[in-house]
Image (cartoon, rainbow, N blue to C red; front, top):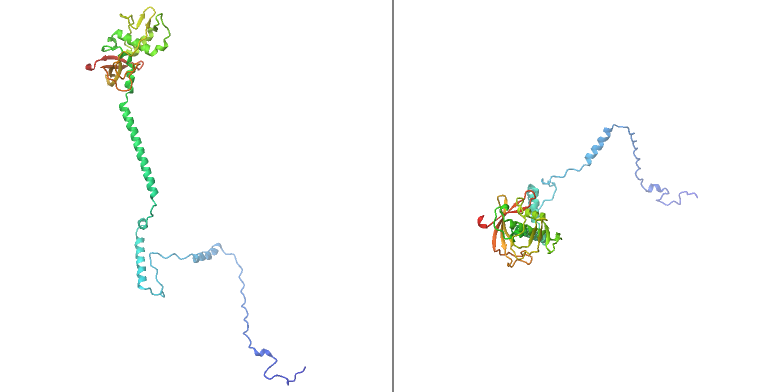
Length: 333
């Protein structure tokens, strides 16, 4: 269809491109530069940038706490009360930092409020330990006191002398200064009594009268044990009828039964050293004393001696055993 311009609408054009303004021209992107090829550089040159980068990355040192930081110029002005409070805090901080660390820590611990009941268990445990310690001290002191009292009152050694002097005191000997000066009959009787009281069960031979047959050698050995190596036994028949009879042809004794209940019993009261020997103070306890038993030994308690004699005891160098060396009255000491 041909348009000859008659039918055209006035004020409009078929070309619409002129109705809108053109936008700005797009700028061409800048040409990119080619990266230069990496070339091998020395090792030291590679580390230089890295060290510089590390220096940049290191944080700045913290400001000194003792120095007050400067306020920026554009800071807001503070009120007088706030400024005074800060000044007081800064002054207190500087005073505490000037003091020693342990002193400040101790002051801080003292200023803290103590918790109630925190040390109750500690006080209870300490009291218990103290009581146990006191009990232990009292027990040890008691043991020490008992041992000291026992050592002071121990008379076991004196009672051993009683057993040793039993057959000698039973004869009630007269005083003598040495075994050689002692009555021979007293020495023989004491030796026979010692042999029978210690070895009666070992003798099983009897004569027609029922008397025990004791060899002479056993009695001589008992004499040495009682009166020492210098004493010589003198066996013989007694002038009067007594508890034994001697057979010189067969060198043996015929001994009848006897008892120690009707004779004196020894009670050693004390002992002391004198001239290389031991002097015993021996009491003679009669059979009627209440402390005597049926066997002739003294029972518990302190007996009442009817008389007192002193016995000098020495030691046999060959056997290291004690023997009676002398008997004397207390007045002669």
